[in-house]
Image 1 (spheres, helix red, strand yellow):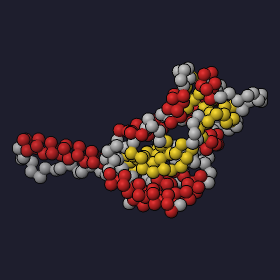
Image 2 (cartoon, rainbow, N blue to C red):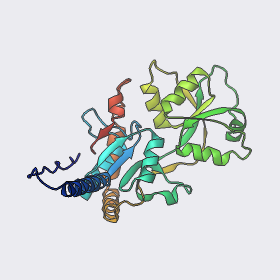
Image 3 (cartoon, one colour):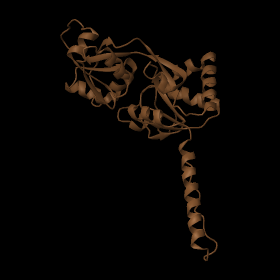
Image 4 (spheres, one colour):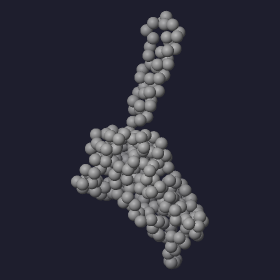
Length: 285
């Protein structure tokens, strides 16, 4: 992190008070300007999401998407700080702070104008999940579930937007939490009937749970597969956008992006309780 400039020291004890006051104003202006410049440095934000958005204990990217973003930054000759936050906070930062990159973001019509879209990372599909039951009953349709049952999902996740769009009768019992782990706890306790997640997300969440969670039953898909992107906030440098788009295109055409993706997905998820590996407060891609 850049350090503020050292305070200006007066070399003459007999300076007039007006000169000292003016000097203080200049120092204050310098500190404010310096802080504004530091605030505009490139920042990458994401959420903890094994096996996509994870970092090892030495702050090294090891998740599939984190590795892709790390490589794109290296090819672009760019340096950035990385922050791993709950998804709603990461989204808020990317919508309010210039020079901020966000991954892994599903591209939807509602989000189209809110971000600058840089490059594709991979595809995912989300489903409704419920606890396994010994009695096998006919699987209800998505619309039947929306009318009758409580559903947990992560606040500001694309699943929230998708479900609300399909709730034509405005009767859905939607419960919003900060993480998929929270949804799993509510599902296990019987507080909700379903939770929303991709297959990879469920696998990682179950492996992270302590005590071990029972297997879950995959129910209806809530939408067709979606493509996840690296995106940027409005106000991000045009040069930065151009460099990253070129790097992502180069990786796509050479096959490097797919190789990195498979490399990241083949890594085992962090062990239960290893929060530092899945969710560092700050790291460098």
